[in-house]
Length: 439
Image (tube, rainbow, N blue to C red; front, side):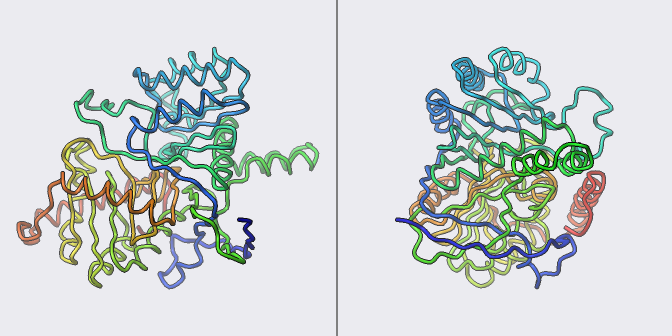
């Protein structure tokens, strides 16, 4: 069915860090398009075969970005497929995070580059003084792959075996994580974002500085404009209104960057929670939400919405677990139910709200994801997709340990000190990273 849309003029840029709650609507927001096909993928066991099939069928170009690209057999199968594609004439461009891939970069770069794959490293850490450069704490945390502009994969799954953890080694049970396979109009913004990310890493400096330097140079104006078009990130700041009903499935690709869309993912979550009527299911391995996010959860629970949080029960980083648990008393007191997932490591960053809103992506609900790192999520407005993801939640809740509000001790001095310690550490970390304003 043809679809007619119009895009309203986006609002002027605002300083969202100091934005009062009543002006939240001025922040950039998700832009939905119809006619998409999405498939929910649980873990690398579902994602990697689908990605390998797409890579092996590629004819023109492949764009890939990942925080972690490991050197275990599962990940190396992806690397070999990328190399095979490059050798048969497909343009393959890969961007890897300098911190997440620091240990495997020498192996990967040799293996991929010798096959004709173009590799860019986002904020490399080759020398100790790289840590002294501004912005090194702001990492590429996105996981995206686009093949021939036809199919995209977006989610929270790194290129690493489901049963292997970089800190704890091999385990028997695969981590719980999700991604989506995406076809349709929303593939375009994913490809545009991955292209811009690769170019930004390849240039080696902040995008704004590069464009400004080029604009001041003697290069022809036409070249400047071409570069700006290639590097322009999907804005996500306009509203779309359809002249008629949009065909299913409705989906939006949303980013968190350090340019225009610093709070788009957070705003999308909070808007959906504020309008929830029946349920809010949310999973995040690292959970330390800001005041606006916590307030939205508390208010939803108080008005009778089922607010269920799926958090880590099998701990990978102790301080991250401490940060989440200092929030428990506040949320439990408002009627929020908290489940700790214990069968394996939890790595899923997903949510289902009511019957027709769901998201799958890379963004945790903590300061690193919401204020610092580059993140990417897909939001889906579709009852069937939401029901499928909700079933995954129900199965995970059944395997988890629910935190019993009645067993929680009254607020003690030790509890207050723990919360103060976490808040102080988060404050210091954010200031070192150059993030200002309240969280």
